[in-house]
Length: 234
Ligand SMILES: Nc1ncnc2c1ncn2[C@@H]1O[C@H](COP(=O)(O)OP(=O)(O)O)[C@@H](O)[C@H]1O
Ligand SMILES: [Mg+2]
Image 1 (tube, protein in one colour):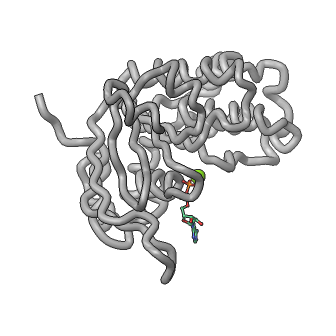
Image 2: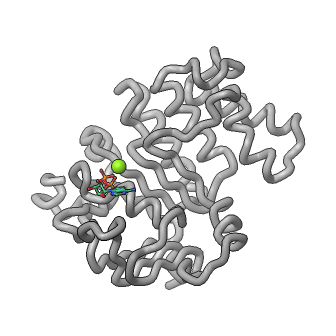
């Protein structure tokens, strides 16, 4: 059975201003329901690639198709509609700092018009899972980096997006909770969400084996766990 890839890039280049190409002629096809890590040294272009998948940036050359539509030709309204189907954990969190943890996570559900009773139930349950049960009403600016990251993860997954993009989502949390957060991404993936996780966390990559989109020398290779030596190099 073959269906349209959920994210497809053809000969995509990314550059900033008149700077050098960060990525050159990248081709990538992500099937619905797939799970990939995204790796590469700092500066390799992981965040830039994710920002194209999230439709925050258009390629300098080439085509990016998301949900079967070429984003080069999508207007603002169409992009906003697509984005509602994508959950993102940003490297720098981008939470509403003056709001509570609860309100940050409730936001995507309120945007959809869900009733407050159901929102309360879902948000509290998820915040408990990411171990923010103590401080759900705390103003976000008072939380630690690790707590903010877990709130950002909860906000990204609360409405079971079609696509989840997470940029180093375990970079600020303690080692003991990282596998638990991965299990949350895996559960979401089992429900059909397409997942891409940029990470440097070798323990996670070894423990939970999935194909890796590896960025190197301005290009991209897909490395599978069964590719032995190559996989060990990531
Ligand atoms: N907004 C920007 N303006 C100019 N250069 C940028 C911008 N964002 C990223 N870069 C550059 O693009 C390269 C790739 O960055 P990035 O995508 O953040 O890589 P990674 O996430 O793998 O560390 C880096 O050299 C970085 O300095
Ligand atoms: Mg980055």
